[in-house]
Every structure is written in C-alpha cells, then in structure tokens.
Length: 575
Image (cartoon, rainbow, N blue to C red; front, side, top):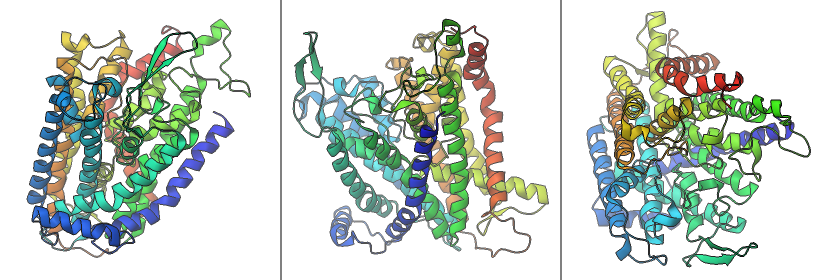
C-alpha cells in the first residue's frame, strides 16, 4: 500500500460522507410527496402517468397489495424484455444486424435485469442490438433500481408509522423515484461521461486498420446513457463485455471516480432517509457507521493483498515493491490507468452494493483479494448495498441484533420504538436464510454435476471458487463474476436465473411482511431500559452479529475455495 493510494481511498469516502445528508434530505421529501425544486418540471408528467394508469397516489396499500403490485410489475417487465430479445432481428436500431438471442440466454438475461442482478452470459457489443440495449436493458436499469428503493422506503415506513395498516403506494413510489431521483441524476452523469470520452450515438461499428496492418472492429453506440444508470442504480450491466474496464465505458480517472460515487451515493443516502423518517437522524448515522467501517476494512484488505502480490515471484527475482517507476504488487487483470488502489476500491464497492460492474477482473486477484468481494456478496450486500436492498438487508440484521440484545438482558427487544415479537423475528430469519440457501445449494449442485463442472476452467480450489462466486453473485443480485467460468450453457443459464429469482423475490416478500406487521404497531417512547441504537455500542453489536452469522454460514465453503488457495500460495504449492 502507498500513501497516494490511501489518500485516494480517503478522498472517496469523504465525498460520500458529504453527499449523504443533502441527498438523503432530498429523497425524503420526494417520497413524502413534498414539493422539490424539480416539481415544476416533473409534477405534470407524474400526474399524467397517474391519469393514464388510473392510479390515485394517495390511496395506500397494505403490505400484501404492495407486494402483489411489485410482483406483477416485475413479471410484465420480464416478459417484455424476453420478447424483445427473441425478436431482436425484427426490431429497429440494429445496424450490426444482430440475430435473435437464444431462448435460454434470453431467459437468463431477462431474469437478470428484472431482478437488478445484470449477470451477463453474453458480450454486449456482439449480442445485443442498440434497441435491446436502450429500450430493454437500460429501461430495466431504471425500474429495477426504483423498485429496490421503493421497497426500502416501504420498509422504513413500517418502523416510522404509528398504528398504520399501510406502507405506501408502490406505483407512486416507483414513479417518483424514476422521475425525481434516477432520471435527473442519470442525465447529468451521462453528459459528464460523454465529456470524458464515452460514446453516445447510433452509428455503425467502425473498422480500423491497426499499426500492424490488421483490421479491427471498434464497437460504439448509446453507451453513456446506459453507464450512468447502470452505476447509479447499482445495476452493473455493461454495454461492453469488459464492463468498466473497457476504455469506452470508463476512460479516465474522473469517469472512474464518478462511477464509484454514483454506485454508493443512493445507498448511503437511504441511511439518512431512515433517520429522518423515524425522527432521529442519529439512527441513520449509526447504520452509515456500520456500513462505512465494514467497507473500509474490505478496501484495506484487498489493497493489502493485491499490493503484496504473489510471494512466489520472489524466487524468480521479480521485484513487487511499489516505487516511482512501477506500481508493484499484483497488476494481473487490472487497468494501468486505475492501478491497484482504485481497482481494490472499485471491487469492494461493487460488491458492497449489488452493482457487479468491474474495472478489474476479480478472477485475477490473489485468493485473499478475491475472498473479500465474495464475502461482501454473501453477507447480503448490506454494506451500503444495492439501491434499497442494502438498507432493508441491514435493517433485517438490526432486528436480529436487537433480538439477541433482548435475550441477553431478558427484555422484549425493540428497535426505533417498535417492539420486535415472534412474527417479525421469524419473517426476518426467513428472509436472511434465503441467501445461503440459493448460494450454497446451487453451488453444491453444480460442484457434483458434470454440466456444472464442465463450465470451470481451473481445477482445484480456484475452480470451486468460480462456481461459488457465480451462485453467490446471482442469488445476491450482484452480477459480477470470476470470469473463468463459462456461464453461457443451458445448465448455468437456467440455474443462475432461478438463483436470481430466489435471491430477489423470496427475500422481498417476508421483508414486506415484517414491514406490514411493524406498521400496525404503536410507537413506544424510549425508557430507561431501552437499548440505545444510535451509539457506538449498537454499531459494535451490529457488526459483530453480521460477521458471526456470515462466518458460521459461509466459512466452510470459503475454506474450500479462497482460504485454502491462499494457504497453498503462501506455501509455494500454487504456482
């Protein structure tokens, strides 16, 4: 690690800290239906949408109605995107004459984007037409992100409301999120990215003659508009196969910084939204503190592992020390324009969030460097997290932490004024157990079936890690991958799609049940026996609960993959 690299990491987290409160205040006003500086521009559009759809935004829904509306909307979006891919050759804006997408790949991709996973078993520039990229994938980047944020706000209302039977209106929350939050920020970000050199056009690909005299096809298209929302909405689905490592998706240090800020800003701001809506902003800052501590620890762990590099290279006289003339460490799979520090930071953030965009290949990280992103996903990406999903995942862990605290002191647990009884705890545990069920269950299946083993390119623990990472990423709705796995097969297309659905919707439904149950309860004022949840003690308790649960559930699987691989590398037997 170098002082310059640590300074860049520190600057990033300072920017994030500065943005959290004002952005959280703005989002709170949006979801409360209050007037904002964008209301003169977007309120007529919002009202028009309501009239067309015959929706009264003031008519709120119980948790069951909210869940049904969300599921129907996502089912319709899935079917539309599937059809768009299957009839791609007949649709406009296809100057490369891309053929129709195969049924199993179209099914996987449609599920992927509907669930905000954006797992890609295809190369965007060689598979998807401009129309599919714009009207299909980019559209889903907006609405899947808005769905996650709407669900988080609905969950917050469960804590904030006093004896209410409703948790909001899904259609109003979805519309306001797209119009007032995602769309204006994405437009501004896209213009910035165009300034940095990212293409935004509908031209055909360019054929160029290289210095060696060979022909090269240079792909382009409506890239900047998709990249802006892919990062802001923590979608991660790249226009190009190389994702944010591609120079047309991420050409400069400034574009890299903006993309990292977009990736986490809304997830961080939602902690402030939580604090404002429950009437105590310190509650939100406590959650922010938990997320920041875990995120910084992850960055430093990856940076240390990648900065050290492979100790076996010393036997061959290779100098891996950072200096003015070389970056040092493990530069395999990393872009020189970003270096190890920004690669480590990006890898941590994209797996803290359910983003999955990558500016370096995680498959080329050292075993310890690859373990941290994998563990981030397995913890449920609650460290800032995907837009919305990170916050409600963290709140589920907070419920478990308060339940444990209640057991220790012999008192009925409560959190921000709501008593946590058997129903809430049961639904919380059901929601949290969904993730290891999908991650470990599908990994076990693939690790013993010939169709699963045929997809790995490395024998031994690294091959197992490729499988474990794939199903962790799919179930966690992340979308990043250890690129050594060939996922574009019938087996992986179908099993990964089912893992994505389980990870998204099987967690959402019990979470909304918890929200509905909490909304019906009375708010209880704090007493002398109330466990404080806005101080350092709560932060420490919550971090401990997260790490203990994560360790108990996932350490055996991690021991078979990156842990033993790191030990083999240190012993000189993995080289």
